[in-house]
Length: 160
Image 1 (cartoon, rainbow, N blue to C red):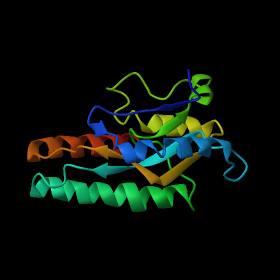
Image 2 (image 1 turned 30 degrees about the vertical axis):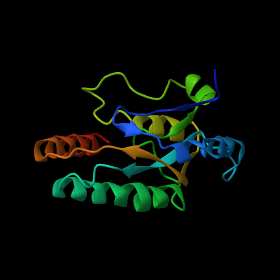
Image 3 (image 1 turned 90 degrees about the vertical axis):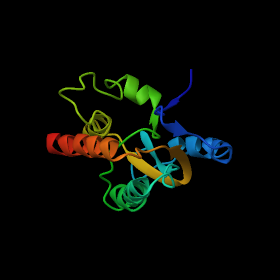
Image 4 (image 1 turned 60 degrees about the vertical axis):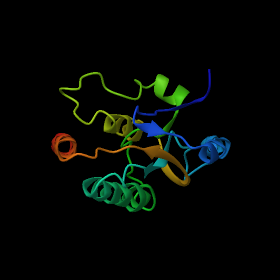
């Protein structure tokens, strides 16, 4: 029905004041960044489970460093940011004509999200990152959950 698709995970939440900024974010699809319009609009995450435990605080700090400093530098000036997870907004028509936004096999494709970024970059798309809007995210708070998540991330990094 619309021109854009935002992927939201089940452990994410949107804030009312951030929802008011969505119109401004969708206007970014009309701007040119270099020679191309964006096909993926990257959105930052706010970890709201950081105060649950000291382990959750550590995971929150680790995640904050990646979703602010890391993705900001990957998007500009390096221009190599991919799709790393779920609050990003996609150009719906661009991805419908180029194979979709995810891969079907969770055994072969451990980090299934990044393949949307690979697909976008290899087919001439443009990925941007915007920090004036954020989506809330609940991260793991127990040691077992955190170690399982880190193992998945490490396996996915080896796959890439």
